[in-house]
Image 1 (cartoon, rainbow, N blue to C red):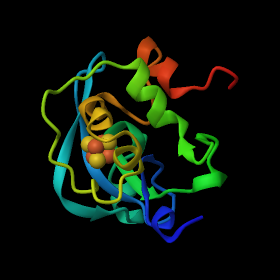
Image 2 (image 1 turned 120 degrees about the horizontal axis):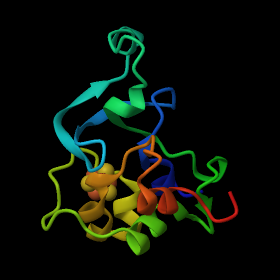
Image 3 (image 1 turned 90 degrees about the vertical axis):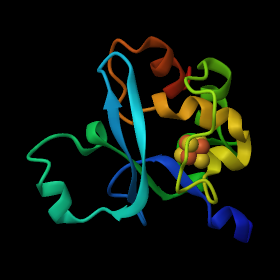
Image 4 (image 1 turned 180 degrees about the horizontal axis):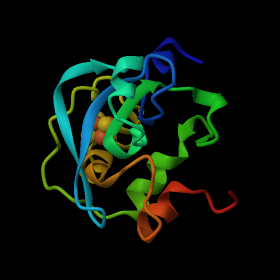
Length: 143
Ligand code: SF4
């Protein structure tokens, strides 16, 4: 793995991953979730998770964390297969790149450029059961 690879972040992380931080709040509706991108960094702390009062943190926030590279099930052929499916299977939901604090290190942006960003606001880590396009993109065919 190159030093550059080692610095990349996963934009669809879990709150307990290494260097996890919140970069977006999930807004919109249950049918059409949309991420509102935060301007400031917010580290994930146990106190913050407690304040959610039992709500699944991945239903409330989008998290970035250190990309796990080959230890992640989505990593294939040296790339993020999830980012590839998002770009090929989902439609853009915005016409301009969102203002996003993690773009410098985002693996999806490094690999798929702005095409990932135009689709990114509809991505939620916990996919609602009736979001067929998002589910198809989220899960590999052989999963
Ligand atoms: S894909 Fe684009 S908008 Fe989404 S997290 Fe990465 S840099 Fe930000």
